[in-house]
Image (cartoon, rainbow, N blue to C red):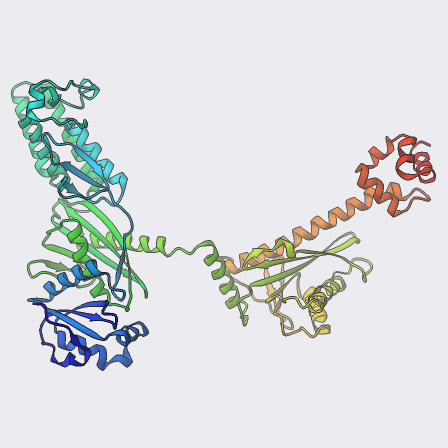
Length: 594
């Protein structure tokens, strides 16, 4: 019974009976549909306890201007009506079933001598539908079984009785290879064909035992009449059926006519798995995602979605297994199993729901990096997330060509345009501590002078000595204590903090340690590469710079043009004169042609 529109001030006049209520905003738009055992108590609770409600529900209440209600005989009737109204109107504050997939069906087409086809379009007038199937693979397995067991035609001819009698069609290759019995030329009777379709219908409904018993009876009949070849064909069909059923059997073939529902819930979304079971076999498996709007209870969500999924998949099973109690029809039994085969089925359903949740909520690449940086913030007890990290490393082999490098990571990724090389200018000999102080001082003095952003974390490749030297540089720039700085020692992956003699150890499995190691290794690689270039360039230039009267500028010009000493040595005097002039060319030529 539909009641006229009321203002929210009239809520105390609502009946104390089950039903559905609808809230409207000032634009007269339907914004929420709910069900209740008692309309008066449920609607009044929104306004009498509004201070205790969550932010989203308070937002809903602030938009309500008027309401309607519809009485129902039972709470379940109210649930059905609520489900229909939500599907029809999709109010913005009701839960949303996120289901943008088009699932495949198997259809027995409404026609004489019907075909059995797969389709993603649901049109009840076109034929009898089975499914939808949660995967194309599952659907194809069933179709393959039907085509191995029965001779179902695949042609699209109009096989009316008149057309067949007039001989309009000829058998095709499917007939010659044994996949079809030729009903198009009346080589198979309509009665025999319809009998095969009925058997196929039983399989699609999950009634495998009916089909198996039929094949078994046919096999025994053929054996008694000594038609052993025909008996063997029926035995092969029984074996095919048993093999198919074995793949689908879960725990106990005696379990039949069951629906299984499980819900795994988060704050804003829930995931519901639905299994339909017949004769111990799962004939349907489906998981859906529900977007919550008002932090609805799991019981409300699962009750509503159970009605929706049972309706979509044509289930009239009288027993429902679930992990929480839900609202049901009076003649449907809700079981919350604790042990036994039904519990195993429920566990399987929960496993599917959890796996679906894991897949849907799996963080993207960017989210993973943010998680790592958050973990690093916690591990190092930083004040803010280190979006920009800079790491320093020295490189000098046997005291030659001392150099250093700085690498920069932004948002957990290398920012190669911000990498820097340093030639050590103020330190003579292999003094790692003094070199570290020099490059840290030079780097941040420049950032301050150019008013560029400072990092949220500095990493020093080395132990306490290098870390102390870097801290001295920061003190001279008045940056000590303003930028977090740590040292990472190679041997045990120990993390040192300034002034703390005892290092900390981050878990070897922590993504934050992996990030620090990666940054440290990148700084080391960058420094080593630069050092090798320096040494190579130094040894490369030695022979040319040893020529008296030939300076670095001339040497650099020659190497830039000819790339190697060997090529310069092979030049004629005329070529050298043309490139360097008479005097310098003579010096170079005389050096290589003594």
